[in-house]
Amino acid sequence: MKKKILVTGASGHLGGMLFKSLANLGYKNLEGTDLKKKNIDKNQKFILGNLKNLKSIIKMTKGVYAIVHFGAIPIEDTQHNILQNNIIGTYNLFEAARINKVKRIIFASSNHAIGFHRRTAKLNQYSNQRPDSHYGLSKAFGEELSRFYADKFNIKSMCIRIGSCLEVPEDRRHISTWISYSDLTQLVDIGIRHKAIHHEIVYGVSKNKKSWWNNSRAHQLGYKPIDSVDRFNFHSLSKNEHKDKMALLFQGGVFTSANFKGNIKNIK
Ligand code: 15L
Image (cartoon, rainbow, N blue to C red):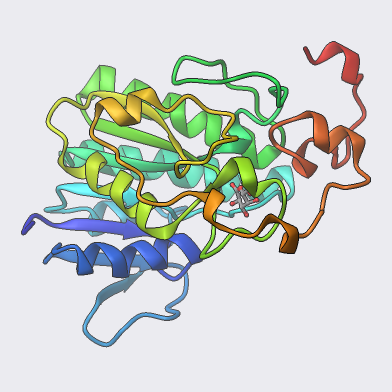
């Protein structure tokens, strides 16, 4: 593809991975941006940028066809930091996209947007948001923000509720949540290219037998995961949630039990 694609969070774990894997897939006109320049190859186009600064994003998004938006704090943080970086940053990005007539945005959502669902529930694209943290709330906001910009301004979007994207699974929770780098790349590629997209919610998960998510919408759009957690030896996985009874009940795991002051019985 020759159209210009902007990758935010290009110095980060998943943004950085995608910045390289999309180039390997044949994307010829990629540009990366982040607060700092880290792990960027010499031949990759990169521009320093702060999503909190609307003016600079407006400049950066000129002539861009699609944005792969992975620039955010990737874990729980203070309400202030999440508000400034994830919520205002994402809002600014969509606004800049509207001003510059960007056609599509692939949004890195997270399983923490639905983390307060019980592990016994099988979710799909219509399941309610149920954020488990300030971080998860910022992802839920991004999903609704992108729905609004799709309906109101026709900026197409795909929100990927990413499970645990790592080179290999590390913890027993990943038996349900793991996604490989190549499967995530495949989903992002579908988000950039698929003609029938308006606003989509899909799950970023490989073909795992014990997945909590019915990913039929992703499959309808052509997603064919090539990886599965089931080929790994589960005995070598850590048991991070072992003694945390609350974490074991909910999909978001330890994000749900951290600083918890509620009543578990009320979260049905
Ligand atoms: C996420 O959204 C985080 O960015 C990542 O650090 C992991 O915590 C992942 O979810 C997960 O739930 O495993």
